[in-house]
Amino acid sequence: MLEIVGVSHTYANGTRALDNVSLSIPRGMYGLLGPNGAGKSTLMRTIATLQTPTEGAITFGDLDILAQPEELRKKLGYLPQDFGVYPRVTAYDMLEHMAVLKGVADKGDRKAVVESLLNQTNLWNHRGHFIAGFSGGMRQRFGIAQALLG
Image 1 (cartoon, rainbow, N blue to C red):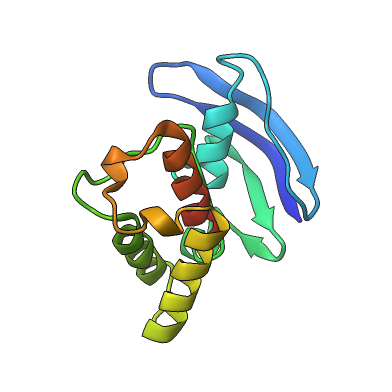
Image 2: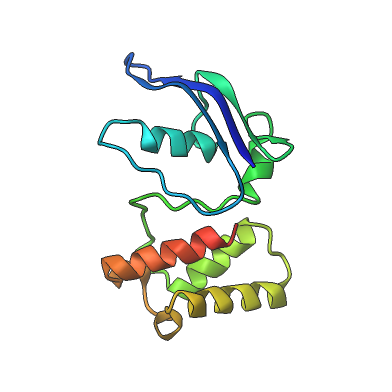
């Protein structure tokens, strides 16, 4: 379960993007919806440990993610709306690299995970193509494969 308790975030320019947010989110898949400027991206970046809240606490199961962000990153899959890609890296190579960063050290295990994710996201036939040349939908599917590594 993800527990968010009293999380607030104020940027250096004084903009308060989150104001005492509290949520209990059980296991499952959820969407975060709201109007522009509502704080969705700020909340997701905070949960993903990409920024620290001004105040509050976030736990994932027994893990205090603000105190142990590296432990969460081993488990977390995060797909932002826009994400950059290296222009001359193939889908297979990039996913393999990300698997290494996620701690999949055994080469055989890594190969199995990468190939499975490329198949699940219907990118197998494009595994040798540069991600920079992918259509928007293909990039999103690649992002999903990358997020599922966590």
